[in-house]
Image (spheres, helix red, strand yellow):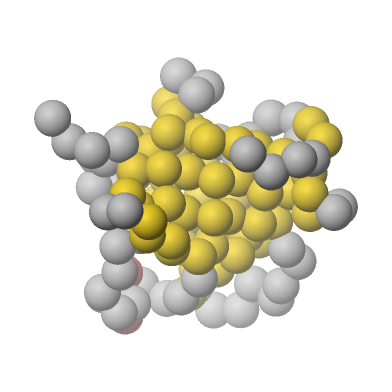
Length: 108
């Protein structure tokens, strides 16, 4: 796990605005990158200020392994717009940047 300080509470919801850019309930922007290692999908999410711009409709977005929305569930995981569960691997401040690392939990 990466070293870093406490980042406080994670965002409650993240909605896709355009490819790679999500917005939370406080209108903070987050850059999201998918990572795959040994068949496990992860999402590295960093709070970075970028112009919101026009939001794209889901039908305008290219196919992606990432969901259109995540919602915090039970405080320790997220449920996405496809009803999949994502475990919070870490939520830290790293070099002054808030980072959230999620891992897709395999379906039973």
